[in-house]
Image 1 (cartoon, rainbow, N blue to C red):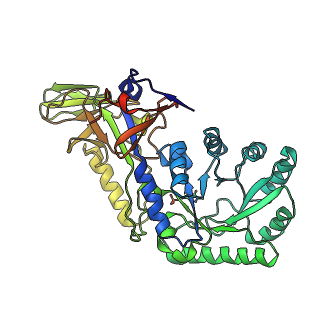
Image 2: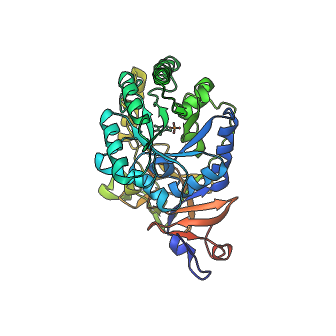
Image 3: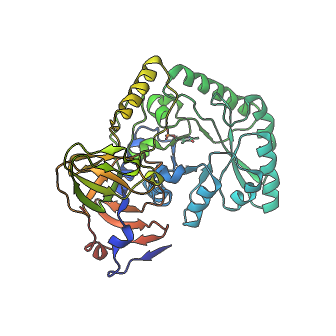
Amino acid sequence: MENSLTPEADLAALLGPRWVEIEASALEHNVEQVKSILAPGTRLLAVVKADAYGAGAVEAARLFLKAGASYLGVTTLAEGWELRRHGITGPILLMSPLLPEETSAAIRQDLTLTVASRRDGRRVLEAARETGRPARVHLKIETGLNRTGLQPEEAVALARELASRPEVRLEGVYTHLARAAHPARTREQFRVFQQAVRALEDAGVSPPLRHICNSTACLKYPEMHLDMVRIGTLLYGQFPPGAGKGGLDLRDPWRLKARLLAVRRVPAGTPVGYGGDYVTRRPTYLGVLPLGYADGLGLTAVARPKSAGDLARFAAKMVLSYLGWRGRDLAVDVEGRRAPVVGRVGMQLSIVDLNDVEVEAGRTVAVTMGRPITGARLPRLYLREGEPYLLRSATGEWIAVSAGAMAAAPFS
Ligand SMILES: *Cc1c(COP(=O)(O)O)cnc(C)c1O
């Protein structure tokens, strides 16, 4: 799967002007931290959906398994496939139901299926017969998210039918929380889930892996860890809001970097970018940043305001934005100094205000933006203790990076 980079190959050219650095030892450290709050019998399912929250699913999955995760979780068949194609043999749970047409392919790839409806169940039975391969299954119970899941009362009959077939391995039963930071709501979902599990057991079906916790619930409710927890956010070094830190010391593996393509000095009164929306107030150095909205820059999810206070804050932001104020997030860090993005963000290029600081073109800057929305086409460079060892290029190739090749590369 990996081509070796010849020493004379130019890593700087492969990397291009923007890339994400992922520190492998931080991902491993976070696995150990999460495991330290689990009982010895509780397994860790590492969630690597959405390209491992931007970290790159294949290498993140390998590191997590080696560091002690027992299971991987993804959303789509294609995500599971990508892992298998790159030689990952550990168990992988598809945490969403599939289209009927996808089921046989998932079984052939030995991906664990979620059965969240009677229709899913029927399709799994057919597909297992068609392929002649055993189908690993986790039942998903509806307990309050109201997205996918079997009603508790329909679960027993279906579970019995699945468990009676030699071609099906009914390995797990789970549910997903709607508001994990809210103790009363979560306890209610837990109660409904436990009741459904007891009904299965009373009917003689005891899937060995019962699981409910995501990152928030794992921190807040140790009594809900059961046989396995499904963790994403914490493994990537972030604490979900409203859950505290649970005594964990996490490391952030992620750094997004870009190199300025050009720098120019312009006088006061210069309109900048499309539409001339921004006009400089003083003589200014402007830098060209090789990132735009197609890469995720400047995109934020707008949630419905939840209270009058939320609404007031949202309205105030809109007014400030009309007056030319830029969000705190839309800026790059140039050696500890903040340079805001000015003017409209373009599709793949934007402009930063370097103020009166002269910076040479080619300088590396640190960029903050939403990780799962950071374009998958930006190269991912994996480091161990700061030393690069592997690159996923902009075109998706995996390239082992040797120490020799790095000498020529412009890391700062
Ligand atoms: C994303 C996801 C998780 C992990 O959530 P985090 O809060 O990131 O830990 C767990 N379970 C399911 C079903 C998910 O989709």
